[in-house]
Length: 382
Image 1 (cartoon, rainbow, N blue to C red):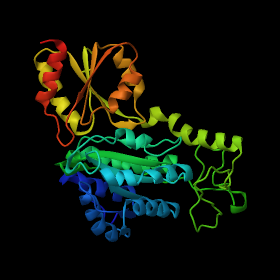
Image 2: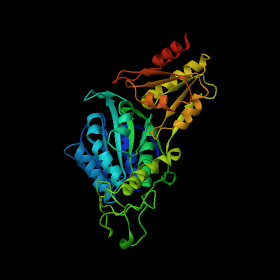
Image 3: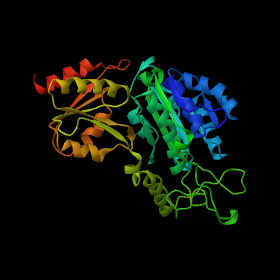
Image 4: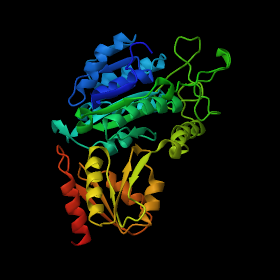
């Protein structure tokens, strides 16, 4: 693959690893607008995309950026953008647009402290709920939660594959610490990297239905390839034309959510540490899970039966495993850099009346292992 990052070991910033992963996944179009702390992604793509035959455009704002990405994808090009905080908010209308039109694309959100413009240069984990519920109506997205440079790289490739496979918008919810972290990256041989391309129609143009409800995921024709495709933000029939028919609406929206809900156990990912005999379970994600991991290791050396459950996808949330674990532990502690977001999922999916403690941390700052250890000891009464 000429011009792509060669297989091997690197010491690389998370944001740059994200950009290089996108190129390996086949991304050849990037539209974006400068915003801290994701700027390195755009800067890197502005240089690297022309080297591999791609196109970079700095748009007038984040609204224009995501719409340009959707247009490029409709024309058959794998496309992405990256943003943070207020820029992510501006993209929310088009998250719904992409979902209704079933256009695959990737948004990388390097989360920062909020609300509003918050602290642009420092970390946050306050966009978990916005990622899923930020646009109106019923739709599904997939959102990954990396906690290292390696995972940022791996999950961007997964995000492109998932977008293409299911014809959906996918997200990578990195955070400022992961985006600006410099760490080890291993790029495997390209033969070991799975790259998924969207399914193209095999039917002749006069028989093709762009939103054929006989398929859970209809094959996607490329604009300009001889097929008639009408993309509309309105509820539409199998041809893509607006409809107010009850059956059409029900069939369409059900299919939009079914394609993820029926595959959630294939998509969702998580990691566990020392959960076999844990009495206390820590739930953490992103950079916070790095501190939680160290806290668990130290507490285990002291004989404390504590474990870590780390969701690697916020959406779909791997609730079934959390439910199983909640039946075996006495208490759950949720640590996150916000005033309470993933805690709602933990409360919803825990299987019984178990004590759930929320351990928020000030947006802008990453909790250290000592903070988590102190909370565990307080919960234990020691």
